[in-house]
Amino acid sequence: MALRTVMLGATGIETTALGFGCANLYRLPSVRGRSELLEAAYDAGVHHFDVAPMYGLGRAESEMGRFIRSRRNTVTVTTKFGIRPTALARVLARGQGPVRRTFEILPALREHAKTSSAGFRTGGVGSLLYATDVYDASEAKRSLVRSLRSLETDYVDLLLLHDPVPGSVRSEDVCCYLEDARQAGWIRSWGIAGEVDHAVEVAGSLCYPIPVLQLRDDVLTRPIPRSASAGTAFITFGALGGALSKLIDYVTEDRARRKRWSTLLGADISQVEVAASMLLRAALRSNDSGVVLFSTIRAPRILQAVAAAQTLNGTLDTVLDDFLDLVSRELRSPAYGEGDCS
Image (tube, rainbow, N blue to C red; front, side, top):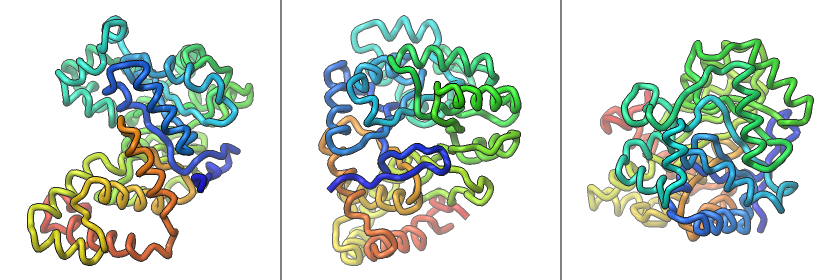
């Protein structure tokens, strides 16, 4: 059974409800291994791919370009602008397995690369490898030209402002350029990618309605404020992230709790595959008209993610209802501390 497809708002872009995020891809040490993983995602039916100039210390877009060369009409590609690898990062990227070794040495940096730019805005090692640019028309144009060259394509489906903070975007300037680029055919649409609070605040400050918002969303956080962006299409990320480990830790720390959850759900939620499947199904229901991004470096988990998407039964999924009820009553309660999202 093929993956469900969605139409992203009024953008005219139709793509798969599951998308593959490439920030984590460079934990694989070889070009061949990364290529095979992308092939596995595509063959499993995932045809939406998310990259950025900063991923892989600047290597991700060129590798994605080689991957999509013979598939351009059957995939959608998102890239971004506003964060770029520094000259030092690009030098490191030329070595043998540089990205993987760098992230092994600096696990905090790996987490920043998988999520947002907040960490390297505050200084430290991250600031040596990544730089944030002004979000204006000239930088958008420079970055798009570089991305088109690296991706070996004459257009990208989505170009997103990468994790802007309030006050960093020259509203009319950048919005006018992005609209001009869309009309010229260099991009099909545009939007903002980032953490919820910052991205929504930036979106509200702009003079144009935002076609696409790409935001973090998981069962432990408060719902995305969709009413603040009427007409906007949503892409979400981070469904597994911290939620997966917190869920498994919570269920396994008490034997009676584990048994109770397993009995109610008809499956052992302490198992990674079961918990990940449930979290992805929750994310897909939450964003049923958009795209949910996931990331892995293991091909079998791609198949598990696709299976989770295919077994989702909309509002009739009573097992998912029971799971979300348990999460709401226990993991998001004040008694659980960090799970409190009130």
